[in-house]
Length: 196
Image 1 (spheres, rainbow, N blue to C red):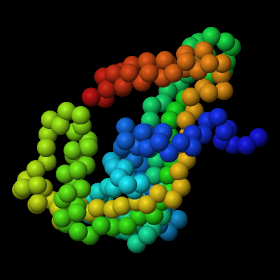
Image 2 (cartoon, rainbow, N blue to C red):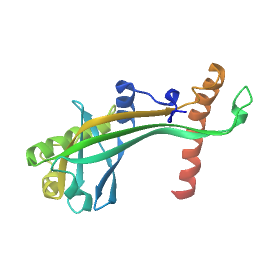
Image 3 (cartoon, rainbow, N blue to C red):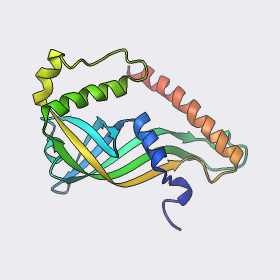
């Protein structure tokens, strides 16, 4: 049997870009001396590349340049699916949306490009209400430019993992979809009540 099952793979670049744009916090993985370095950073999809920024003191910063290879993971909604939500007899499962990417990374040295990129990222993340605008003449922005490095990832491999009960009857797939929505809303509230 081929793994992962074909019905849980989504090869649509548009679907994967939708995940990246909706859930931009990425897990960025580099490897140095057989040891992974992992950082969670928002990445912005632009012209088939991913743009990001990292603190210069982060040990992974030195690997985000020189055409080094990186693996990037984006996570969409996920949850446990109880057999009780289906209309037919099933086993328990876990549904999720993930995007796995590989790419090569280059540092962008220009402070002007970094400044504009930070402004553009803020604009993207503030959408659609734009309650805050990062102004180019913000003195705090200028003071921090020396502590941030900008990088650009050229994507070399795309893999969409959309495990959404596609192998079930259409009515059960719909029940699983409704549970994914309900469970995510409820679990976020319960989790935040515990930790925040």
